[in-house]
Image (cartoon, rainbow, N blue to C red):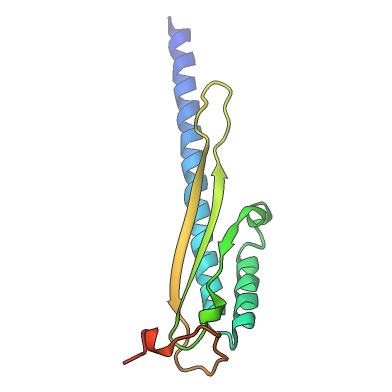
Length: 144
């Protein structure tokens, strides 16, 4: 009688630990992506021209993910529209990745979880920059 209870208790503990590990993987990934998006935009908004901004953002993203090579290979980035680059223009980036759940032989159906981080920052208003071809100074936060 006690052996069955011990086996069921061990199974419940094991499944619970796997659920906690899966939740921690999502939390850790979200934290890393938030840092990557923040650094991407910091580098992007401090650049002098649209092409340089994209290069700087990509370099900053790579720096943040340098020690997480497996994650870095799976990350998808929707870069800001460089054509709208200019003083006070909003720059938004979307960084996402799919976090796979730990697979267990007894319990299935956990699948995966999509982690997506969106961040927006204004390009430095007091910096001389080469504006993109679609930059509209009247549509920025500094207009008026």
